[in-house]
Length: 365
Image (tube, rainbow, N blue to C red):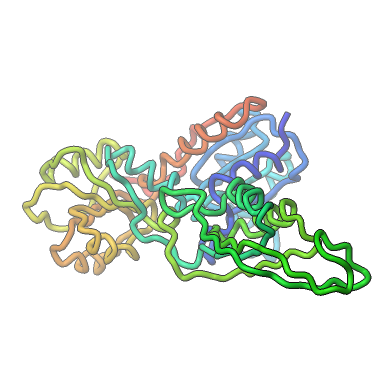
């Protein structure tokens, strides 16, 4: 039987915590990571009804999209639903994990699920994230350079877009002199040594830095490994906010909005004035996506499907795209399907269950 720590490790391969926004609080919020998982309940929000459902369905691990704990608690007395959930979860031995904006920002996350529901193809990140890449430079004796490269590639270095095992290599002469306390791989103590080496440059995702360095040190033959790490301003094409894609064939705006309402199970679609053009390219963002409006327009999106637009923000479309606001819960409700499929593919030791409780706080008459 798998424990919580093992399940968390797999979840964080899907959506590394380092990719969450600065204001977020994804991760293990309640529970002992050494405890065995009997069954997992997947939900969008943690409410008292969700905790009760977990108890009723004998689930001792809740995985939610929205974090139960966003800000610090100065007391836990049960004066609001958050505190009552914490108390009940601890009393019942239920662990709580949140996978929020880190799942928004990955290629196969929340926004890809929306694209799939709407039948979009050729999907890509709408606003790729900068500052997520670093460059490793190291120096290795020629006979060992291929081993070092392959070790780095195996751990995830050298991936650029749809290419992998990318590196730049240049031969030259390295010099060094070891003290009497050293045990040099080549050369002699106290004597300057020259060695034909290869300079290896490769790129990697910043959240993998500890793994990259560990792989380098393990594969490299030298006692002291020389390496440099440089931060890069390049955007990461597979990490970022929102997505954009194309329909297989153009449809009218009215027809597309009806598709959105049906496929996303939305009670209502608030939208800007229609432009009288066919819909071919569509941008999406699960949750509050108004910050991506300019990116959607820049990408040439005919419609931008998202949620939480305020009244005055609808004016900002300026007839350049159609904003389709379907509601926050509605835009993210299929996130649990991502988690169900992913966990089911990786574990057979516990049951994975979708919550039956609808936690949408907004009702429509």
